Image 1 (cartoon, rainbow, N blue to C red):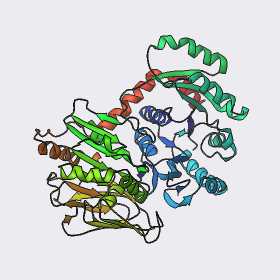
Image 2: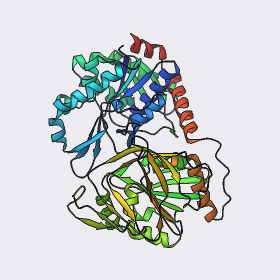
Image 3: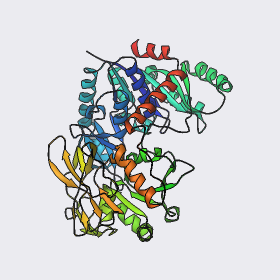
Image 4: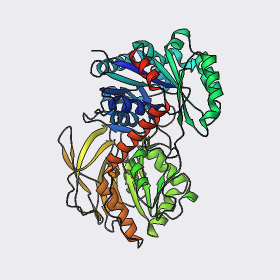
Length: 504
């Protein structure tokens, strides 16, 4: 069996390719088709671990969820995680291989393309429809000979292409016409329709614009998708805004933006808690006096720690902690909270060790082997705020290179089981007063009871009434987001034309 295909390409970055792909996955799944997303090559610091222990882009995991399918490494066979300078960690078929410069990576094209081809053909033979996503723009003519994600993939399987453009920042006519003009004839023939995304205002006033695009390009405008002020689905790899959550807030949570911040989607559901504001802060003066500071994951922990020291952020975090603010570290942030980070093998730096923030009596050793695993976690009862009876169902995943040992004055947080290997161990550390803790577990705040317990701990500490148990789960909220956006896209597009393109 060979699946039908449709490919969502864009006139540039940040036009909404990822969420449009998610919407197509959900619409087709709701129509009864077995659907899979596919992005051959993704450059992102937000990643996800599949049940097999493979690492893929977080966006493809979200798209798999939209498609009601289990995420697999075939859905994103090549993941590039930018590191320091001009290099990225290259992940083939879910496994970290090595760090490469852009020149080295493109020079390895003959080794990369077979990995992509095999993954794509496995999906084509296992599903009824594959929704492919491009990257950036297909009109980057300096990269045409090196392309492994846009028209090269479309040509490989003769996938029809829908070109998506954003009207939000202006220039949409030039974006569309310019992109099409820079394609060669074979590529141009694969483009079957155009979507205008992120439209604000009265659609009737844009009719002349649609007429122009269709007359000039000879392609149908399949529809215009309105701009959403509140997007419940995570977009690719950019912080869409710095402030999230309630404007009439009682709790203030500040997340530190690191130069190599990774997996900041860990905190999405904190923004949906009532009367809670979530802020991403870059500078010391932006910290203010939050109730909670979170130091997130990092692709380059040591370099980002040095950045926090040099900018005065470490000094300010310690001052705020002494004044009563709680501090949490996730993955790389957990490593930073300790007394030392040692790197004897030079995994991240030529320096053998660096002094940590020192709010936890712990030390971390960087190690060559990268841990990637989904986990089941049981809280050990060391959280003063988390005393739920049913604690066996906490879930998360690990993505880290490093081992942390804790000293006197700290207690571990979780017993974890790595699902692929069955290995059991403890994770995390918490201070005696409970105001500083860290863990390697990503996705922890997706657990509803844990997240609400943390919020209530912060509320009670501030003299506020605790919130009742949440009436909607993180999974239900995400499902609602998929369905609402699928409805919006379905109602905004000429779906008969879309189906004709897919099933021609």
